[in-house]
Length: 263
Image (cartoon, rainbow, N blue to C red; front, side, top):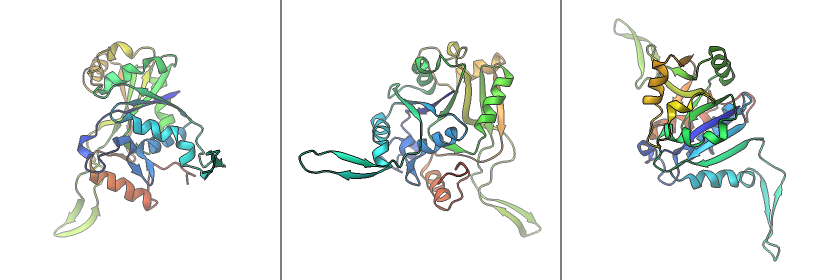
């Protein structure tokens, strides 16, 4: 099974965090957030990726083209030979990564339609955004999708609270939770599983198609969209504050999305 990751947006709401990098390349603990997302999939056996590139896609290509060199020790020979010797290999990832140009201004549905040729030979494929992490059980999500027999599965999550939550007794605070997840209502968590044979009529061919609008609405009307509920950790990275939060969690050793046994 393949995982498609949407990496082409401009990330205007987080531009103050870094004006030079596309949002999927913003580093958490020294590695781009898209790498963290890919690690989550790989932990569940999904190691074949299609990255939908757009805004500053060259930066993502550059990262993966130089991945082995950036994760290994090097000896650089500056003499006549001028070659670079890679000593061992720091890279543990045995991944296949397709870097697909899908247009700088293409919308989410258009990006998925643009990579049809890379996934339509599969029965199903995973899809997510390149700017959010979770401790979602991806294998369980895929199994749920197969069992339902519908065209699309979306992960339903509870949004993180914006403010701290206090439980009061009289005038005394008896419990305080800093920005907990809300206890009511589900939203699109951004982790999908799609039928690689039947989803395409819903996406069409218009690069302006927004996945979260008519395609998902039509799937819901036709009874072809089901939800896999996830009440564990889920955190998007839409603002500089959320970017700082994810880095703080990683640096403190409290990153819930980090696969077990991962260094």
